[in-house]
Image 1 (cartoon, one colour):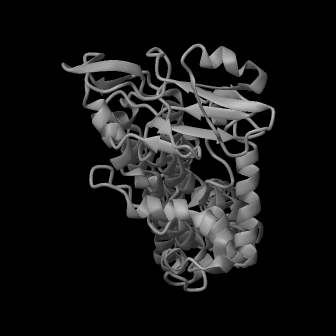
Image 2 (cartoon, one colour):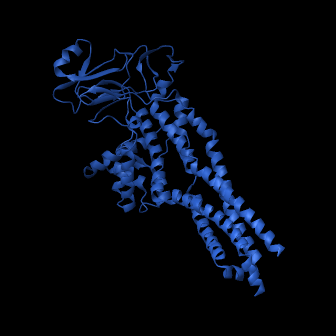
Image 3 (cartoon, helix red, strand yellow):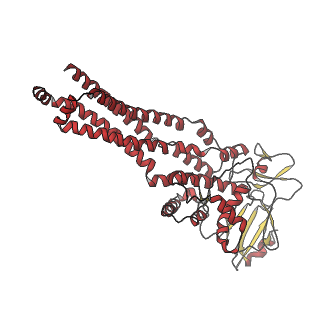
Length: 460
């Protein structure tokens, strides 16, 4: 009884120690909650899949552009006739911003501003296009323009083209759209299904790429809409060359992806992606490199890189480095486990802090020192573990030579902005720095209170 009375007299000291231990645990509890929320919350999972899918989408846009042909003429039916050379081969014809020997400049090759070089023995390809009123046709024809029929042309308009303008762009694509042309749209968005499966599990155990290829091979009339959605990406996968090595890991056109799964989760993800695309910054998503011809027709040259080396760097870069961003899936799972353990320790501290009889009985129990030591070691393993992991993650992402190499790529504004955005995503440091600082602070508070606690305990 006397010991208990003595314990009550010194209760404020016990309260002091337990209070500071509780504070250290609450700090760790808070940061663990944030890590779990960021890593495992559904909206953040959606964002993870969206960002990886956006990478594939941009690479797909680049590859589609570079697999296109420079328009050299039109058939009598208005079908474009393209030159057989690829974008990479055109880049090889440029040296020190000039065409190599035996080649002449015939326009602007790409959006970076490289020259379009053509053999001296050949005519230049088309480098000027215009859609104007039929009433003005004679004005163009008298200036050596040619004309060709184009589908979807208004009845009051006519299409004209020429190859005499060596300061204009080479033509790779012609489109008609009521809106300003954009880079990323709902119809060209490609899903990284590997990332989707990583976060949400298999999609009804469907090997989606096989299904898409089957549709492409069958080519029956009942599936023309599906074919229209997937044909471009199937061609993209089948015609890639060894140099670009764009491996789209089961990635698909988003509209086709949805047609094969009606899960509620997929529908929610569809809504999420639509909102993300709708809220893309207009100045970055509107393709200002398109030239308006008239009657809502636009033309464009290749998406431009300074040279083949920069193009290869961009296409072959391992963008999976984004998956190392803190917190990744594994660290989020470990944070969830650690969170439950810290909650148990907090419950014990609360009982000890507000119930002196419980605290007294615990202290009398055999093995108490061993228990408090093990509880402290568990706490330290959690704080030190996340502290070390956070520091390593910070160094890997902020001192990563691969990201510096990616940033060194010279390309047009669209590619440069995408690279800056990707590097910025990888190097978001607020949570990392918070995790490091809070764990250090909690560790210092806990170990200081524990030292004082044991010092007082053994003094008695």
